[in-house]
Length: 156
Image 1 (cartoon, rainbow, N blue to C red):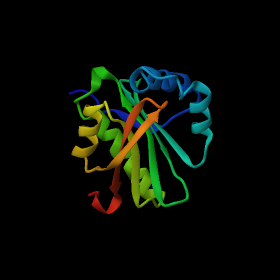
Image 2: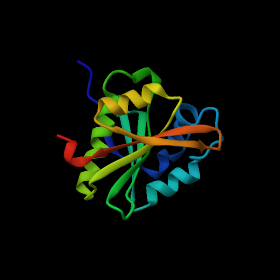
Image 3: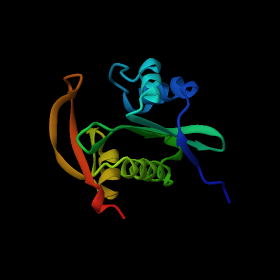
Image 4: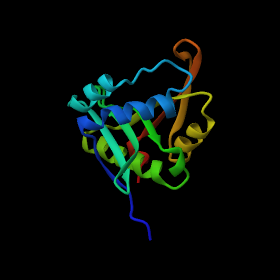
């Protein structure tokens, strides 16, 4: 039986790998926003969690969650290697981040998702996230975003 993945907070040394995953798996077709420097800053930021998913000691996914002062956590990015999708890895990573948000006192998680990423939208909706509207041109003025949210009371 394969070993379960390990999920933990990221180390600064992993910033470049995380940034590359963001560029390739999330930001494709857009300018590179989550550069190594920006991910490093997020790792160092006390109001942000950068989590990594390791499978067989290889970095295969990550998530970035920010905690603004309004009581709602903001899931900025979440990605898992295309080779490991549909195997529950994204769900495990998201559940880890949701647990962290609860521990931080958040009552809600909010996120934006590319409107053209129907698989991601379905993933979040399957896990209890509700659509809260659209934002035209959210990504570089040319790709719309779907806003999703989940009240933590709805989480088991």
